[in-house]
Image 1: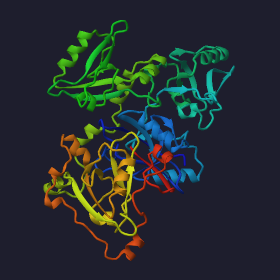
Image 2: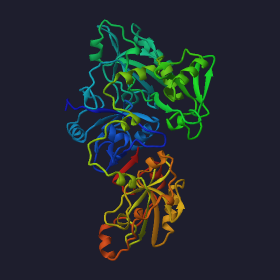
Image 3: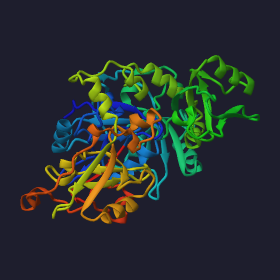
Image 4: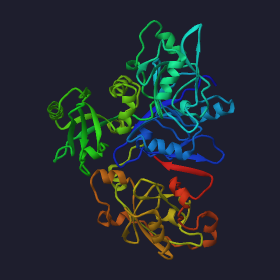
Length: 509
């Protein structure tokens, strides 16, 4: 299937929010599946579809990695991450035809638009116990050094290195004209990580007789990416302190105030400020940078890098501005989450204003346990505060009481559990006897964004769900498969598994 076209989708999430989808592996299905898209969330707005398979995360091929490895890659990406995604039908067909998905023969597309620009690529490799997983070859009849024997699933393969790629730079230094032995020595002296500038055959032909350097490269294969943050000033300012490294003229963001505009925009302690409103600040002094921020008015855009990203770019002797320039020049890139919220809404059936306001209210759900239990599971995500409702059994006590998938649990029998652990909430539910009362929040993110504390004071009589008592428990037993909310085993909770079923593993992202 030489003509398959993975899409390239970049997602940006706000502080404390998710990307709006679940990453799953399922019994009998190959690949990392996209499931449970949140309506109006970043993933849905950017064009993700249910059943699609994630092939790459920030340029790294992940199709053959474990679920937990891919989850970690996404989490470690910060508020912005780029995915290569293949639709379900194409993925199944590619697997049936044994297509090498790590080395596609067709040019990927971004939101359906073909990416025609051919660019050299920066690839960052961190050595594993088995090495980098590639070999170098040189031929007297052909100038240059070329990649060969790139092992499938190796460090090199996951970093975007392909067979026949020509090596132009090692750690920012040109190796064109260097001997095979000299380049091998450079690689050995690099230590545990290395940055390559590579060019494939087609790109090499396009730039024939032209100077090729990192300034022309794509940074999309790099595992760490700079972050573009839009910050709107609050009553007390932006909520950070700007510090300058006088020796290097680097500017760092320090003392991030909790709940400040800077924190909500995703700024982290000791992020290095690279640019303000698209203008690089490396050669500016402290006063000049402060003036640039003040001249932005009440809103400014920062390009920042954390320590790992900064070190990686420095190793390749390339400026993080490359990322900004590439992002600005990519007209087919999907909008950020903030931009997407301002786009015309997708065509859907209109919802009355009253109904929209009702959705923002919490709901109090009361239910009586049946012989088959309550009929739902409780899902706790590692690294994310809060417990969420999952696997609501159709027709069960929870379903009839008004519980819905992804409802956030605020209270259990009058006790606030927003900061409680998974085990603590499960224990409360189990100790409740034959009846259970839960305060739940649907569209919780919107309430939090409005600065509203979720309490029973927000309830009105119309928002109460009725108590349902099982009149025909024998019949209900046929429908309800789960006796009660279960706490998954320790090793499963570490992977943030959302249910006790062994047929799937999923992760809310």
